[in-house]
Length: 99
Length: 261
Image (cartoon, rainbow over all chains, first blue to last red; front, side, top):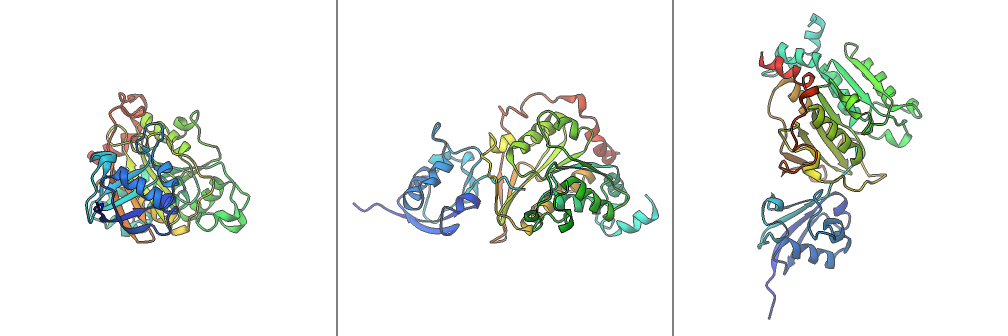
């Protein structure tokens, strides 16, 4: 059976963006949740992506990193279980310490 | 205010809601600029130009050649000099009415509260999270507004923390994230974020507008795009969820009192 794919826009900023060739990526993915998308991006592009985003002890997003789906922080949606639909935009913001 | 001051600040006093009252508040205001680096230099410069009466600039580092692409208060001849001293000299040249104080120390958990006591606003010009978190804790205990900024490459963040009213740095980031010793950056990134921070400081002092709180601003210079990230106070925040320590909080509100009268 064919896995249905969704076409989404992914934006990865600052230090996270450097793991990718471009910080704006349009892609087709079978991922249906933010968690699945992180797994997908890690497998397809760079395994460090997941390591930097997810606290291995808790399995949750590190509190210093923000993830927005269509401009809304997943902390106020369903966190890693937030659904991803065709046409969505998902943005990843790591903390930066420079001054 | 003297005639000279009225002439000097004429263009900003023309701004609606500013006038003599706003300018007097700035003259009476005391602002700490924590760090005389990429953020601290332009922040101190604009605060000083706007007529903030007293600026304390804190930095223990010495100027290096690789700082000069963005740390605009330092010149080639300052390489090797203490950054706070170098900044003070330029700021005094810009505005002889301002009381500029250079503090050549490292900000630590032990000295932070003392360093900011009696000031109205602290502007974050640090280059590491550890010290930002120290300042955050001290600003919360001293009840002093803290304008956070941080930068990387062509990107940066900014938010305003009003203790016990809005999310603090710990509410926003949790634990201090891992540090980077060296980071890419260009002057306009530092200046863009620093200018947003100064706008916030001036607003807090004059009472004009609304502080940028409960939101973390992300600025992407490459695409020239601003993203607003909602942040909330954490009920169990180890820094700001406890009762307000009122003992030292009177000085900070002087400016606000002036605004209400």
